[in-house]
Amino acid sequence: MRVRFVGAAAAAGLLAFGLAGCSEGGAKTKVAQAQQVVVEGTPVTASGCVRPVENTNCLVVKGRGGGYYDISSASPAPDMSKGVAVSLRGKDLGKNTQCGRQLTDVKWSYLGIQCGATLPSSAANDAGKTDKAKEKAG
Image (cartoon, rainbow, N blue to C red; front, top):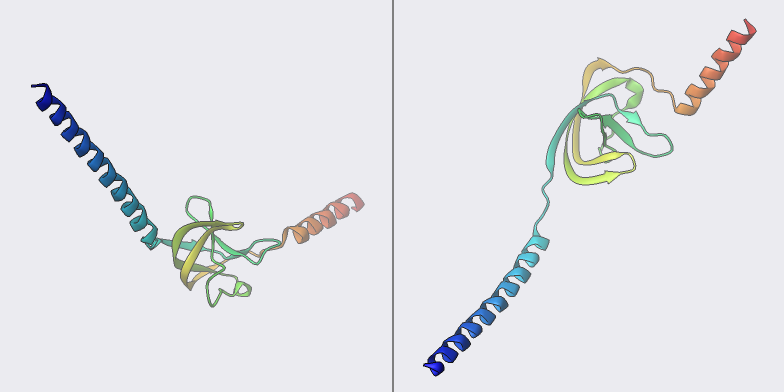
């Protein structure tokens, strides 16, 4: 009876060892498969005024949640001198830039909505100083 028990325990041990080896191989296979997955991106739609980001070459549009979408990859880029809002579609691959959430494959069109004038912050500060100087003088 002892021989049968030892034999059964040995067989169970070999089976468990064999299954453990298979699970590691399975894990490696899953990792290899995960590395081959291509990220398709989340579709994004937004609309608003295109703004430059100071001290960068970025163009951004404010999103619904208050964050900014970096649409610098849009080709051709919207002409900000027109002062017109855009409607856009793009893909969010999950990458953030110094300017916001980067969108790829950006397609856009102009809307019939005028945007306010955009002054770089240094120009806005200079204008504020001029106004304060006029108040003191007047």
